[in-house]
Structure formats: C-alpha cells, structure tokens
Length: 385
Image 1 (cartoon, rainbow, N blue to C red):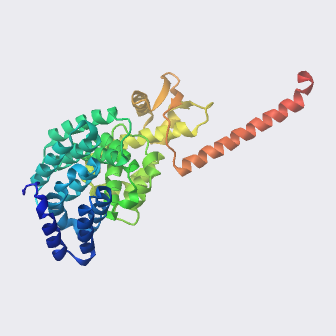
Image 2: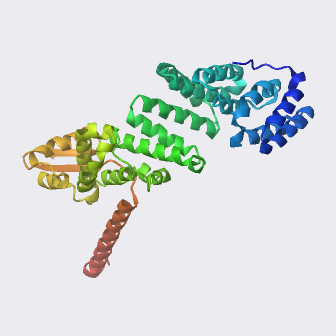
Image 3: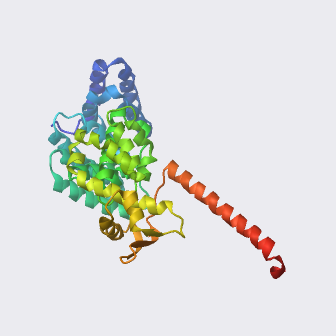
C-alpha cells in the first residue's frame, strides 16, 4: 500500500492532475479544494471534502485523495470526520487485508484521549473488515473494547452507535446467534434513516431479521419487527411469505403456520428447524389464548388449551411448563382438575389487530362498569343517601 505521508509542496500538482482526469461533475471540487487549502479555511474545506465523498462517482478517487491530500492537513480535520473519510476510502481497496491495514493505521492516529469517539468508530469498522477475513475472535475483542468505551461516554454521535450495532449484528449473524442478531439489528435500524439504505440492503436486513425472529429461542414477541417499516421491504418479493409467517406466529395462528410451511423448502434453516418452529407456534398460540382472555377469566382447562394449540390433552401440561420456564406466563397448574391458573402474561408489542381487540375489550369493560353504576344508582340510592 502506498505511503499515507505526502510532501505539502506536491499538493497543487496532485490536485491539478486529479482534476484533469476526473469526470466533469467532480472537477470543480478540486478547484475548490486548492482554493480553500491555500486560504487555510479548514472547516469549509472539510465540508467540501464531505460533499465530494458523498458523490457515488468519487469512489475511485477517494484513496488518492486521502493519501495525497488529506494527510497533509489531517491535524486540522475533526477526527470523527477524518475517520469517516477514511472509511469511505477503505471500501475502494481491491482486497480486504489492504482495507484492514489502511484502517489500522488510521485507528492509531485517532487513538487519543480527546478523540476516543473517532477511535471507537475506526476500531469497530476495522473489526467489520476483520470479520470478512474470518478473524472472528479479533472482531469479538474489538466489540467488547468498544462496548466498554461507549458506556463511559456522556454523549455519542448516532453514527458511532450505528456502526457499533451494525458490526455486532454482522458478528452474531456469522455465529448464528439469532436472538443477539435480532436485538442488535433492530438497534442499528433505530440509529439510521432506513430511506438512506438501498433497496437491496433493506430487503436483506428484513429477511435476516425475519429468520432470526423465527429461530431465536428467546424471541416470542415479534411486534416490534412487525410494526417496523423495514418489514415492508419484503412486499412484492420472493420472500413476502416470510412476512405473513411472522404475523401468523405473532397471533399464534397454527392454521396459517401450517399453510405457509410449504415454503420452508426455500430456506434450509427453517426446514431443518421445523420441530422447533412447531413447538414455538404452539407456545405463541398459548400466549395468545391467555392474552385474549379477560383478567378474571384466567383459569384455563387443559381441553381449551389443547383446542387452541392443536395438541393432545396429555401434552398440554408439558407445554405449559415450558411456557412457565421461559417466563412467558406466570401461574400454577392443577394437575387433578386439569386447569391452568395464569396470573401474568409477558408484556407484548401489539400489532394493529391485537390493539383493536384490546380496544373492543376495553369497550366491553366500560359498558359493564356503566351498567353496574346504573344498577347501584337505582337499587342502592336510599342506602347511600
């Protein structure tokens, strides 16, 4: 890789050469670079470079610009901006190892007490490239270090959190740790404007989130994903059935689950985990059955649960015990009477249909209270008087 040091006397010559070879839409930037550089207007120059970097056609010119121009005045650049310029340049190397070498040197430059935020972003983005090289342990070490540093910051730019959660999600995807991927991918999406993602990126993220939600052994509430606009990226694609499957799980609809199971052959992970998915939909069906009941109607016979979950009655007790162990519900089992008494059900992020069902129950409750108030008023007036 070429040296990142440059003789300041060659700056004008470099900019002139780049301007002559660049496409028309980029040439004016090189003129502005030289003008602002000569006048030592570092903030305005940084802003102009940022505009240049954001132009798609600038890609092939980013590494030369960084190595032959930015390094001449990098001590005048905001360190977080410098890292972001470096990250853009790192994507232009032909091999991953060159990107890692480039970012490692950049990371060392910003590793100072006053620029730890820039160091974290450089460190975690270097870990991204290391993960692509198969250096999984190095990636995890970087994640742990950055996590500790972030905890110590008072304020952090959102772009740094976005980098951190994105790389964490990539790591957990590589490790097939579905629940952790699900958590970090959603946190990443909370840090970015999804309209800035490409169509392909949105579809891939929605697909991966859907798979992780289904296979995550601790994920039994899909409401947050179902209400997220990223899921709409699956509409009118070959993976649209996944969106329907998530809604079926969230509502515990076993019939719809069985109807969509024919698609599992398109995704080997789902096909190989069919037994686990069947157990999960039964648990989701149990949760939904409890959730739909009013608070004063939580003594549920085994027979009712068997009907809801389509399980034999003799398997209901084991299902309930599983739900209790996962803390999806709280309560007790009366084995003699074959009744489950539920005192609590896991809070849920509701989809629109479930919110409407709750609205209807509240209306029913309100009507009951009104009738009771009228009854007390008519029958107990003298007593209260």
